[in-house]
Image 1 (cartoon, rainbow, N blue to C red):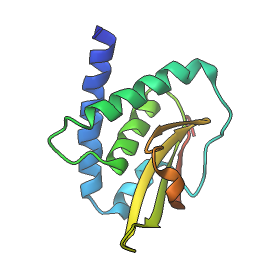
Image 2: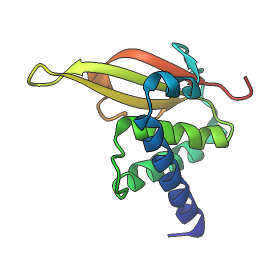
Image 3: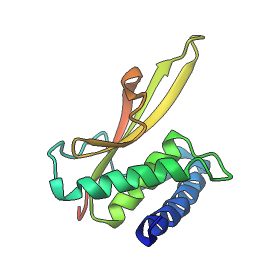
Image 4: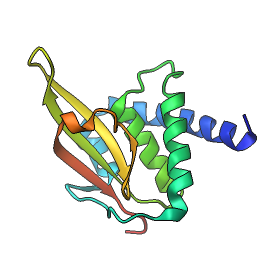
Length: 139
């Protein structure tokens, strides 16, 4: 593993911990840090970001398996959003709900930047969007 990858994994570990802390506080207090509520960023591709988006997605998904705290969908989406924000890349965090096999209400979160889904894309089609937050850069 090269030094750049190691550095990205360390950064993702830090942001996963920070996002887990944010998840522990009331959502109404945390929500303003996520961006403009019920808005989306553009779906237009920015080819120069493709490698960065892919690297961050891999780092978050890999490191989330090794944290000693819960690092599921919302934690991963917030961590990835902050990593993109640090690189001046816009993103939209989605919150969705659905019913599981037992009829129980379940929630999911995922993150998109341009046309690329960074986290939570594996099952997002099963969920109805109930909230979204646009993190615009410089606004």
